[in-house]
Amino acid sequence: MEKNNPPVFTLTIVAIIVGVALFKQIDFKNLTVEKPALSAVYFVTFAFSVYVLAKHYIGKSKK
Image (cartoon, rainbow, N blue to C red; front, side, top):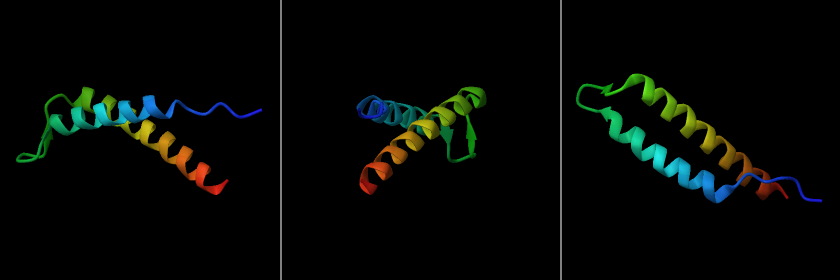
């Protein structure tokens, strides 16, 4: 049987949406964010989705 693979399409969409939202939160002129707590949640979600996607594609290339 095949292992349960993460829903790659869903995580890709999540990474794109959260990445854009995080990018919009950053004020590059002053190097601040509008809502620091929300930006932290966005960053953790973005990092997790990118980590799972990278792990999936690296594991897929080794096979």
